[in-house]
Image 1 (cartoon, rainbow over the protein chains, first blue to last red):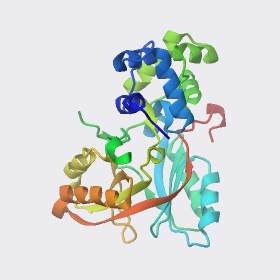
Image 2: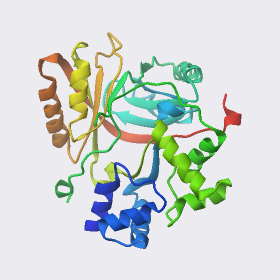
Image 3: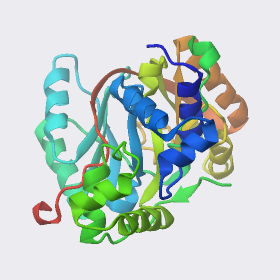
Length: 154
Length: 174
């Protein structure tokens, strides 16, 4: 994966937000001294290479419904089956294996709090494992990305 | 500018907004007039689509419209969820300060579940090595000082599922 200066500039300048205006790619092009078509071509290529996971809106889950981070501690023998069951449960959009006694961490979503609780209760029963439920109480900094250190990555 | 938000009541989404979210959760069309193209799919004008996007950003339904990097693919292969046991009377101020560190991508306060789980502050840190993540965790420890009575780092060993927000159509809501 080879990124040139213009690719890096696109990521640095727009990972925190791009202009929501009539011709967004043209506005970005003007800012970076590229053409609109070049911006579009580069964004498409970066997406194709999976360097960008998306060019588009990041939705606020709590505004579109309810969500909650949860974890379970699965034994090595239970791990695969538990992970598969979590992935199949309605509303799960993230599931990470982590190195800890609590080794499966997932985010469950639903249209409202009542549905969310119902889904969590059902999954907890299916898994037969006590579930750690960790709703967000306060967000101090939320998913705005972080400064990429290209030097360190090269 | 503070990025702090508290959990608030969900906004009411119109059918049109839900349709727009469904159509763009994997990204905007990469064409000169993305709003026009979306409008054609959804039977709206380009102006209406743009106006709804701006309104949803204003109301907080959309956090941002952005080129979202895949940090893992860029070389940040170590994703450490650092978790901290911070004194309740200090967490509001210290949480803000940890959230402001340039290498922290998310920072949340969550409840403890004693005796199983004593950590109430979560800060996500990415690095190209474990050493780098630990170095950054050390900087968080410096900020927290004596208000912190314990911490650990949970490295991810596999991403088992990762998708964006998935809205179901209103009709199959259960």
